[in-house]
Length: 152
Image 1 (cartoon, rainbow, N blue to C red):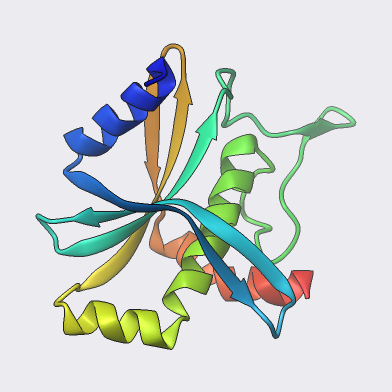
Image 2: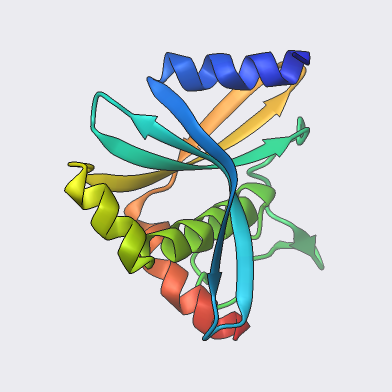
């Protein structure tokens, strides 16, 4: 295994996450958009499924906002309260992927029948210095349907 691969699997294991599959496709015909969850994991402790967005590289500052005319930029509506940073762009991507996954009625029904209580999301950055993890919070989850409407 490559060193980054080992680091990612170790980070997942440390969090009690067991990979189920990679590159799990999700889509919305209505919005004419499709993407894939990089990794889908099972969190046995919480009996949850976790959608993982994996980014390799990005060793610089991820939280710094883009600057225009000397002023920090914010994202466009519906994300206008978020700074326009690498981290926030990737959280928006994860939010949409998570939303598309949780909209799959057959999938969520099967997961529920298996006792899975929730579908969570994490964003992982892997680079030579380590792996950083950010949790997808309720604010980003609530914005996902609005993001889809904007890109439609």
